[in-house]
Length: 506
Image (cartoon, rainbow, N blue to C red; front, side, top):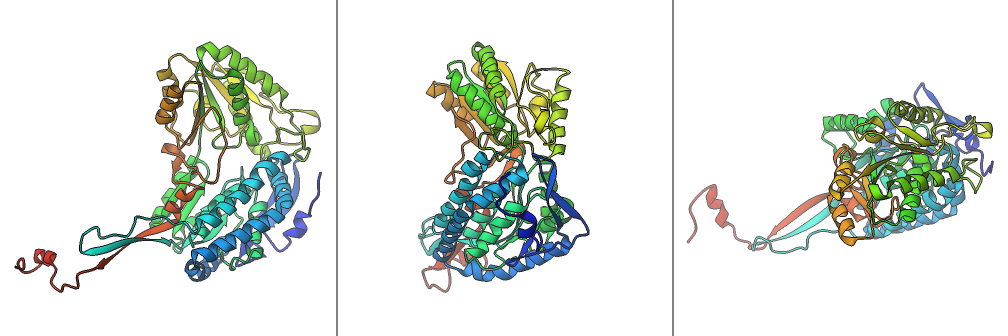
């Protein structure tokens, strides 16, 4: 394994980052970060308790007036420096991300790290581009204009599948808009969130602008969401936990941003490029070992292409190379934990009773047996209402179902509670245009599946939540819109006063 740094030594002072420095957690509980490729412990730390959350919120609250009062240009300059520090730390970030998650190093170095740096650079520019309605005399007697103001202390909770990118998605729009933040990463994967916060301090952001508490959802997460000094909660994770977050947040009437589960359909019409669709389905289903809320999980293929599509996907899945995440030739790493691997295996094993496992469906042996690996799995013959089609699995599993007419294909694609992402595959611009309008999802790809860019928003509808990450649209989440209205007449008795006292003046 490529040992770039000793994790225990690097975080010897603890896994909480509050007011610009590492500290130990105050909870009685501890947690071990496990390398999912080997099952070995790489770091142990004391978890955050309620007092740590309180300290982090207090640090963020103390930093808020100065940071909110900085000019957009000053915040922009700080974020540009932040991007430069992240660039210098790119190798270490990629190493830590693959170590704690098990993702192939080529994914960390080519997707997670550069994507996070690009997002930082984007928000450095976006900090100076807050949009609003043009000032004007809309009533005739007054001048109105719009202010966008920061909300306050943001309490964000991020998942374990993309720890670095999710830290960036939560932190960057919030601080670019002038807020301060307390981020709770998943306790499984705190390393790159801590490194991200440290990089912010190295870049010159004031202490307390970015804070990290590493703890469980039940202790640290619930305290953060319900904290009276936290003005907004942003959560990415499962729909079930999102419902709990919403319940807690309402106790203090917080603004809420939820990016929840997904079950993305992959709709292949009969005039699609079969080879492109098959490659897209395998890549879209297996990225990050399928632990992606936008992953292609349900392929609906029009019947003339169905058999050929299944055969092509099976062949491609069989060629995917499982292996050591730090081997540059590895295509698929382990799942994040053995518990997650067993959860995925449970879905597949139950599906054997009503569907066909065409390829995969088991954990590899040999040198990989100690890790949380699971083979790429293709399933056919599952009913539309079955668990494997309707529930989020979060593993390298693709179910393929046939359809006949276009109406049926779109209806089947929309037939889950989720609405995060979808894709449609066709050479016909009218077909794809219809699909882009009628597929109920926050993102619809045409003849591709998975790519994201900093300039465009990410977020879902229905049970996949609401609100947007990335892009200038995220400022809708992290700013208050204030209307300011000036009287231009200097008239003491306004005509509208007669509705309260007196008659119309003549």
